[in-house]
Image (tube, rainbow over all chains, first blue to last red; front, side):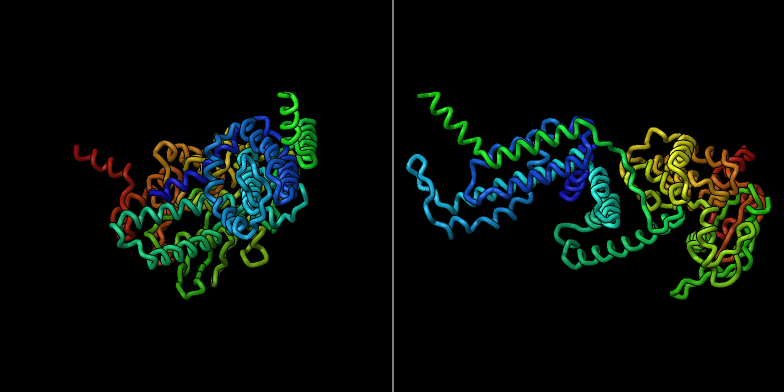
Length: 269
Length: 250
């Protein structure tokens, strides 16, 4: 049953976030800001730029290694959403046919360059966002957002979204299993039953929301939720931020790949 | 202590869609008493508990907790006195970690940070779950969730504990631990359950309700031995009593 597998897959990122490595222990505010800076630097590179993007891989690779996150877990998720990026760039090679480079006598058009540039930027930014969650945990990110002065209402919404995502998935999983147990072959799996399942799910969610609200009222809820603050900004956090942001700055303004290539050339002469 | 008396006088409750769930319930529970509420499905147990915990307000009749009579204005005050443990733990535990969940009530009571911390630790200690502090609720077993749900209520230091099916979905060992835990509490307890053995163990008094009315009210030992009464209300003799009856034959 594919749904079962997907279900456990979602919990996987959550499982990873309870590890205790150097990057897991960094202040989530720092991780968010650094990752945000990373994304800004990456997308600010010009559209034909390909070689200057390469050094940026150091950041996700660092998070992955230092955070002890398996490559497969992230790669699978990146692959899963890659069609979006592919469709954004797919027509570039057809529209932009000006020849920019001819390495080894093969003409490469601007369209292909920008297409690959989009893909690389996509891989960099999405894998960083996923790794950020894998090494921070979602409540950690919410804590950081609250301390970065995001309106509390949004933060609480996000917290509840995360808490009840698992419950909702669990309910749907049980409903789908129940349907599977009594439907054979294609019968019982028509869109009609699916619509009914979805509507039942909606009603159940509303009822649950009501009960949760009652549980909150029982414990004196009057519109305020305090988000626990667990992290303190330390010198490690500041060092991490300073080093990574200055690296991004260098990668953005100096084409490191070119320099390495040139020195290799001159050395071999 | 007079202020912990729970008194219901001819309580009626009708849902907005017209279903009359409670049709004149009256009883009086004194301080420190443990009362089990039993009855068939759909006879109004949960509605009764929701009224008791001030989530619903009787359409007719009167509920008073101590000197306070339940109405729209006194709702908040009554909720502070009553610790309501919901039937479904996933509804009760809504914060990202166990610690934050248990701290939710005390924070809303306006306690200082140290006091909150003290209460949370004491409550978790009481249910032997202090080691779960930093775990998210969706990664706990059902037994752990139940224990934590009780801790969330105990942290508020309520006068009266109200529980809806506290032993549902528990394995026998967790159920036994829960019973021992409940026996250890000196609070007034009101427990709705189909688990009559649990009622027999924890509550000295039992109320049977049917169609939103009290059918019988008395010591658990008597009521839960009355086979005919139980049968009429879709219930059975508690297993421990069935066993005793069997012993008479052999």
